Image (cartoon, rainbow, N blue to C red):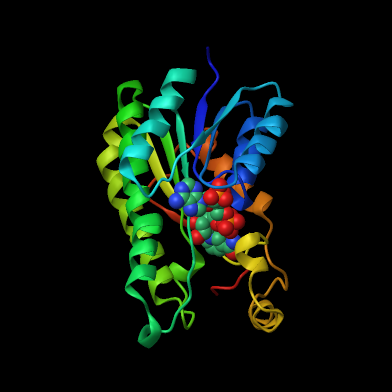
Length: 245
Ligand code: NAP
């Protein structure tokens, strides 16, 4: 079978959901990872199957290494290969430094950083024998632009950009490309929880005058994963309506 298999973490909602659907539209089988939103993950599966490709939903808390190992085992069991990883899961818990709690700090480190290492390791182990693969890590424009209250989130996303560059060097010998995408404000549940005042403050900072859509991020992900981005590795691509300029 020539059909590639993509593993998308956090694909029940938001950017991950859009990426899973976009990659399916482009003819890939998809492993839809979720943690709490089973019903939404199953809805994504139904949408994907309409494109004539296969999909499975796999529950795994990707901040736990054992569950990540299980996620990739399920992918191999069903599809026999992993060609693409979209490392997408992330949380944002804004806090000024003097109010920062240790629990929140640990949660962000586990979900926004450690999970990316766990998933990259498993993906690389599945890809290296084929001498081909593509990993896209979802970072954030907050890794480049300082926003008060986001010291932890910015630091975790900065770590993703750095790990991306190093893994690109390590894995290039196996034909595996590793890039990251740093979105600005994108219309997902992450943004809908902001107060109206905060949304207006952020909107005023964006030259294009609007928040982005998850599908716009998914377009860039699919460009990198489909072969059109075959000579690109180790980079971080900002997609933010001009917020960072
Ligand atoms: P979102 O709408 O809040 O969705 C988060 C997704 O992550 C959900 O599918 C959720 O699944 C999953 N998830 C959370 N914790 C998980 C865990 N421990 N294990 C497995 N899945 C887990 O987020 P989003 O806005 O799409 O953001 C996606 C990525 O883009 C994140 O890395 C975020 O930092 C980055 N980003 C977002 C924006 C933005 O403006 N939205 C901007 C820059 C960067 P369940 O519901 O099933 O638990």
